[in-house]
Amino acid sequence: MIKIPSSEITPEHVYLSRRAFMAGAGTLAAGALLAACGVASESPAAPPSGPAPVASKATDELGDPLNSYEQITTYNNFYEFSTDKAGPARMASGFKTSPWEVAVGGLVNKPQTFAMEDLLKQFDQEERIYRLRCVEAWSMVIPWRGFSLSKLLKAVEPKAEAKFVRFETLYDPNQLPGQQDGYFPWPYVEGLRVDEAMHDLTLLATGLYGRDLTPQNGAPIRLAVPWKYGFKSIKSIVKIDLVDTMPTSLWMASSPGEYGFYANVNPDVSHPRWSQSSERRIGELGRHKTLPFNGYADEVASLYAGMDLKLNF
Ligand code: MTE
Image: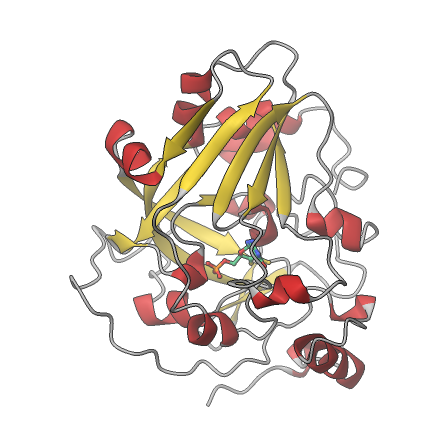
């Protein structure tokens, strides 16, 4: 059992609030939002069925070891299933990910609804090893499989008026029981500026460790934006729209003082309730220093030249 530093132990009122949410009481206090770090047990997963999980390398480009398949698939944030880290793996196994379609439209010349199989055929799938840094100050290193979002966006030809991209998760309260709770403005919505969305690092992930995504990781298709806090990396996407105004994400709507639109990883800007200067790498005992833009500053800092990153958090 890993000893949890006292800074990561969830305060009792937050814990109680989470219990209330899970009971469907709909009375979640703001304090419970994305503050669940460190409370879940890192319990062993069932061994994967199908091909063994494989990755081409054992570390990321900084030399940090990959998290194990088991860690990545058993410690999850997917509030549509549960607010408990171990909950999604337990509850998502029956989630229906086929047939699946992604409707891409809005301010584009060629709106199109893509069947999942066609996305896999049309766009070459490649491995990308990315760090995922949750706003709750834990992190993992994950070998995703997927393709750059820019390829999909180019296929639908964004119009010049398109300034932002808005993403939506499936809305299906029967399959996603968390959506029966009225506290959050479901469905989960996220957004990027068009230039962020077109950046080559912005990935639509369809797999990890060479296998299809598990439901708890956002099957069959989710975003992976490695320089932003993990909540930007929306799961189980069914709709992508090019729009001219900044989308309001679920987290912006729920707690605007805590979660902004940009959500770039920034060790110098604390969350109102905790520091962002360091992080707990899942499976390790010590803490890592959090890097600006999660270690991707060379690639992406220029996107924000001249912007006040404290104001635009
Ligand atoms: N997407 C949806 N639809 N619902 C969620 O609750 N949680 C986000 C993000 N995407 C979430 C989501 C958060 S807070 C994080 S840190 C990552 O997913 C976690 O991804 P993982 O469980 O695959 O590690």
